[in-house]
Image 1: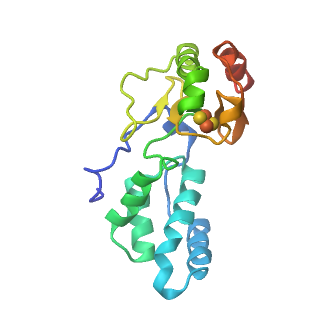
Image 2 (image 1 turned 90 degrees about the vertical axis):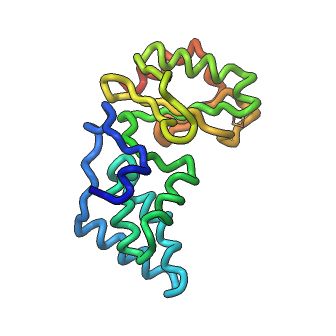
Amino acid sequence: MSSLDQNIASEETPGTKNFAPFAITPALEAEATKRLAQFPDQQKRSAVLPLLHYIQHHHGFISAAAIDWVAATIGIEPIKVLEVVTFYPGFRQSAPGKFHIRVCRTLSCAMGGSYELMEKLCELSGIDRSHADSHHHPVSVSPCGNFSVEFAECLASCGSAPVCMVNDDFYEGVIPEQAEALLKKYS
Ligand code: FES
């Protein structure tokens, strides 16, 4: 068991089925070799971000095993990798749904109805956000594992609030009444 298991929030979710478990594959090792070669000897720790992005892209989230591997590969303490994972909201510590919806909750979007949009998305997809919090459990997953939601800070399109993202797709001016159509598009 990883020494970090007591400090990270990587419990299973219904979304776990959507992603292959973290594994040290030849492709991952090749990626590490490529990334490490991009930085001078004194700056190898800068490879932390691209390696974490690669792992999250392929495995859905950053597990304790992934943190240990990144740390060992770069030659730094696992806590330093965990600090990066917990600092950037874009990194997750548990599996999201197949389609992960990020709803902006900053001022313009909040005033435009993003909280109501979030409520509607949860109601329609059966997601229970009662245990969600901004730090340890920002992601809530539907029982079927297909959808997950998370509040995000400003997504840089304040003039077209409220906005949200479904995986990498960006949507502007999404009112709660459009939530059903949005979910259907990905069902
Ligand atoms: S406040 Fe929502 S995009 Fe800026």
